[in-house]
Image (cartoon, rainbow, N blue to C red; front, side, top):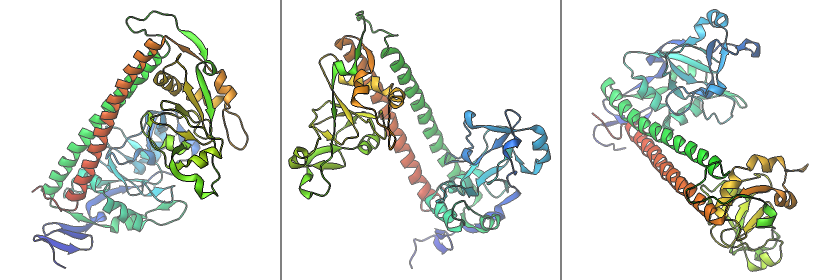
Length: 419
């Protein structure tokens, strides 16, 4: 097989001539495993426990405050060989999910804390020939994920043995190139993290605006009319759906969009313009489905109760919906945002034994407060503008993640050199 000049075939694939192939074990020292923590060993305060859930694809240990567990200083002292700090690199070698999505993932510790390792999590120190950031980024590549899955064993609880992990072969650039690769990918991570933080802030601002604007706590300039309490049955027409017989081919693959709950949950944003399945005029006629006009609120009343989208075209649904056709008393986008705040209330009103469902009657009796239609429209426009800002940031974040994946695929295999 012919190779590009300057490259060679190795056990880990084609790599630059200057790169080596080494075992992971040759790069690490002071290898530490998790403590055998029992439920009674956890405390409300004390020394932090480092769980598998804190190891993800971000490159850094990240444990949500609400999920942080502790053990007593006495327990930690008695298990000092299971303790790590920021000088250690962390790897997960056990996963409760059979496909092993987190197995082999590697992260670093950003803070100055001391942790007691939970079972299935290991810590080690990297020798002076290795840049920890290079090792961490390598663990997020598709190539490494295949390697981890190829050496894991077990069925219900999969794991990688210490021996197999240390014997695993990886591509190994010179130290200066490791540093350049790690720096480039860390810069990409910093950009992604900044976008994530900005996106989270924008979402919080929108959430706060919804709580104030949709309840009348904050009034827009120029509006002073009193808000009125209305039942949904007074201001909307509530329409159930239906399903044509699946045994009659003539009812299917027509030109009428036919919506099911997964169309709603699988579509980002507030609008639904296309559905996975379509029915024919004959299918519509021979079912309890009803054609719904553009602008209808498609409200899930079964399974994913409370999820909602606005139809951008004529559509019909299956029986898992109680769709709302707005009267001239209510702006459909204003009501859409109100419904977003009521998901838990809708679920509370659901009944059933085989599956939960909220009835047409229950929905019709739900009361909401509404201002004049002109104020509803103004509120909906403000929230829509916020949605647009969020959508732009989401698109930038998605693009940034794709760019980083592309960088990883070429930099960590040596296809593109930084030296």
